[in-house]
Length: 124
Image 1 (cartoon, one colour):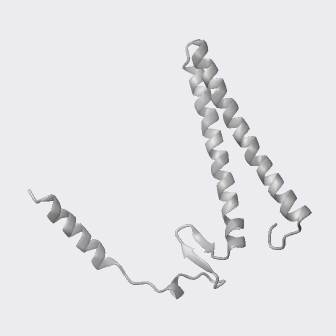
Image 2: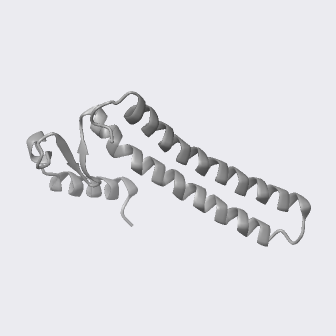
């Protein structure tokens, strides 16, 4: 039976021998100012990066709220009439809905302040 250190050394040597050096110029996207990653072309300028990141963050927040609502309904279904379990499940659902509303109002307030009031260029 091979030793753990020998196996680890073999795996490490295999990975290190297959690594190809990459220069920064090879990772740029077609526009020349974004970096190509597994998530796509990510902008490196702060304003464009935030504009790229915010939809993903709000989408993740909405997905988590949706999963918490489903979890709350499962808790209600499996509570067998226990008042404490039903109350906990209702609080879970209420918290998820409040979090979802906060995400929606945050998008609205962000656009209201940055686009309509301050008229910051580049944010739409």
